[in-house]
Amino acid sequence: MNIIEVIPITHEKVPETLSYFSTADPAPGAIVSVPLRTRHIPAIISTVRPAIDMKSEIRRAPYEIRKLAKIKATSFLNKTFMDDCAKLANYYATHSGAIINTLINRTLLDNASKIAPPIYNNRPKSEIVAIQGDDNDRISSWRSLIRQEFARKRSLVFYVPTIESGNWLFESLERGVEEYIFTLNSDITEKKIVETWNTIAETEHPVVVIATGSFSIMPRSDIETVVIERENDHGWIGQKAPFLDHRYAIETLTRGRGDKLYVADVLLRNETLFRTERNDISAGQPFKWRSISNAEDTFIDMKDPDAPRIPPANTDDKRDKSKFKVLSDQLLATVSANREDNTHLFLFALRRGLATSTVCDDCDTIVACNVCGAPIVLHTSANGSNFYLCHRCGDMSSADRLCDNCNSWRLTPLGIGIDRVYKEIVDKSPGTEVFRIDADTTKTPKQIRAVIDRFVQSPGSVLVGTELAIAYLPSRIDHIGIVSLDSLFALPDFRIPEKIMYLLTRFRNLAERSIIVQTRKAEEKIFEYGIKGNLSDFYRITIAERKRFQYPPYRTLIKLSIEGKKDIIAKAMSEIERDIKPYEIDIFPAFTSSGRGNSNIHGLLRIDPIRWPDQRLVNLLRNLPPSVSVRIDPESLL
Image (cartoon, rainbow, N blue to C red):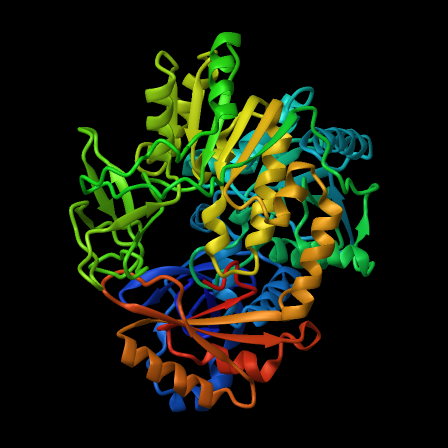
């Protein structure tokens, strides 16, 4: 009889290890199924000890030791990989099982006995190389890298932030290597994942694998090169605990294996550029500090000091609407020219709906959801009537409402949503075929791809889309119009300038003939940098701001969040503040409310990166109740 200590693979808050008994004698690293509460979950064996040597410990145990359920694979994960997962668990103040649960796709764990075991090398030296360049330049570099590695009889892996990024990269690289290039992502069926995994393992020729972050291990020993493509994309951080940043995890695992790692994008993150300045990582080639585009750049200041604000949609107010323009004359002329020339035009609108927010003219109160308190968005229905929709909880209300604060009827919609842009083109350019992509009309990837296909096959058409559309766009589009990014400037978050610059740079990279940017915030310096592709000055200014306010990379941020009734969560956060002294924590309400009528409160710690992980603080964070979410290096502070 043996006592088996296992690491439970789950994102739930559980002990680092659990103990079970078994007559079997499996090796550490084996995949097993174990009972946890009322169900069975996968786990990794960490230690195996004879029960006879643990008699006294078993007697003193405050719980009954249950029987091990099933051994799925006798040898699956090696010690080097487990050690790296332990490092990541320490960094993210969680347990190793939560890290493994994020890094290894569940299909691989469930089919461990049917697939080739992953191979985790342990070479002595690792190198990290950063590449900043346009899409075409990077694709050329990757093709050369593939030829180079194949000549060395070596395979390589590309990691991407989203499934659509992987599809784009696959289509860009497959020519000439069709038999030896594979994709792994959660959009593939379980049967196909198992089949592809085993084909990757059994192919004698070197291979190229394009994968998302949950396929962090591979069944080959000849992989010495790993690429993180589209490194600045927002899709790298997990949406549930432990909120793992796959870029950091892949880098940690790459260092553990001794592989060479490339990180690349059209505009690298400020943190990555900072590391190249300090020679922590090297530049693979001279950086492109000016994004070059053959498209004609047009920048339009939409402000008209004599124009009134848009009249309320729910009154008979007769104020003149004509001076407010959703689309500039230049953009409307591009719509006409696009139709006549049988080209393609994409118009970017930041948000869904007619208007992104509504403000009372009398007391300046933002009109909010009656259920959850989040700002509501004006929409239009199929029959032409207007209504308010909360994008947080989904509550709908009539556009015929008064200000909750002062009972005024003078409510003014602000901002430009996709509904308004779509209607403007239909009204002012009759005969133009208009498509749209947003969360209201295209709810699945299949629907989005269908719209993209129809757009591509319809010369002279216009596609109106939110951020949801960007990952699905073709690699080149004749004309691109950015209708408005202005509402982003209202968000109090340190990453917003980088997000705006990344969007502008991506769109310049996509535009073939022209790009038009219109704004009512022409004074913002970022437009000058973005429209001309001036990456160098943008980085210089924003990294100085980061240093001034002690944001990354100058500090590691740790965000604690609690959701619930306002008085209860305020008390809970005060207790956390007391318990983690002498660590200083800034407490503030969330920018937006949560659903179900609850509030959110955040606590922010700023830690010197050299000191993190601080083991005392790690232990304190690990012992917080499950109701407190802990985010290390959060994507946003909102």
